[in-house]
Structure formats: structure tokens, C-alpha cells
Image (cartoon, rainbow, N blue to C red; front, side, top):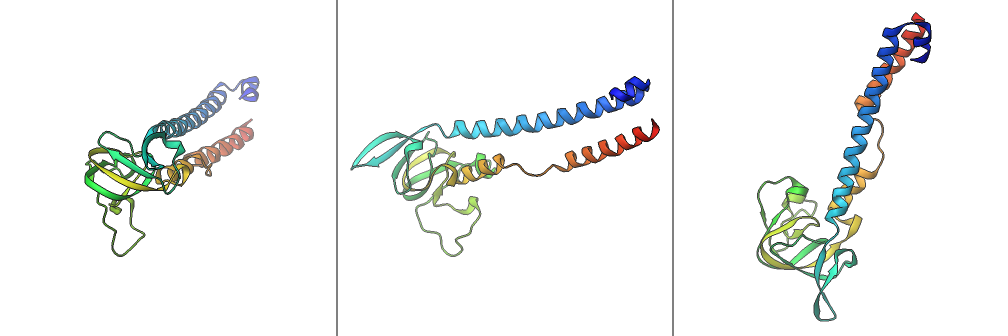
Length: 186
């Protein structure tokens, strides 16, 4: 852009500046959205859990849970970890943040028959971290915490740097071709 400006070709200078600006804008928007998603997942993780420890029910930060802890869930609670339900009383969870289902899901403490590799929405005997209890109560055993939970796996995928998006690669290719064309014209 500087070379084009010095040569006196104002149209090339403007085109190059627009491309650079658009590239920077697209990169900023994508990075901003990824940071917001990670921050929302972190906020979801900061809550308390009612846990059975040493024969007594106590309230602990969700971060202190370990696999094998017995947890009590009640209406209004956020599920603090991935939990295998062992005792359920008309439990319904809002799993929309995880599965996209728009209505609360009925949960059961019955073992699932057959295939153990079911989609998340079909695993009706598991309560997932970050979902909300909208009705009923339940007890369950913690089976996964932190990044081992289903929502933790999603957060991990968001943090991994993947290759360039198709738009980024097309913009880079277009920028290279435009640079060669401009150099050729100059």
C-alpha cells in the first residue's frame, strides 16, 4: 500500500488498505467470539454442590468434586459435574446449553440397555455439568469433572487452534494474487 501510494496509484492503495482492514476485522471478530465462549464456560463452572462427605451433606465448590462423590441435585441447581443418577424423583433438566433441546428432559436412574455409545440426548441416566435442574430432585455419583466432562470437552475443542477457516484461506489467497497483480501493474 505504501509503495502504491508513493508511486501515485491511489486506487491500488485503497484496495490494499481495504483488504488489510477486512482481514484484520474478520480475525478480530473470530477471536472475540472464541474468548466470549470460553469465558461463558468458565462462569458456568463457578458454583456450589451439595456433597455427601464423611456421612454428612455439605456444600462445596464444584471445583472440589472428585469422581465417586455422591451429589444431591434439587430444582434450581446447576449440575456441578457429569453425574450418573442413582436415585431420581421426577427429575427434569434443561440441557439446551449442551444438546440444543428446547424443552426440559426427563431423567431416570435406570441403567440403559444395549448400546453404550449413545448420543448425549439419549443418555437419560446421566446429568451433565452446566445443565439446570428445573424440576424434582436426585442423587448421583460423579463420573467426570473439569475438562473430562462433556462441556469440558467442548471447551477443550474451543481452545485448540485449528487451521485457517475457509474464509481466511480464500482471503490470504486473494491477497497474494492481488499483490502479484499490483506488483505486475507497477
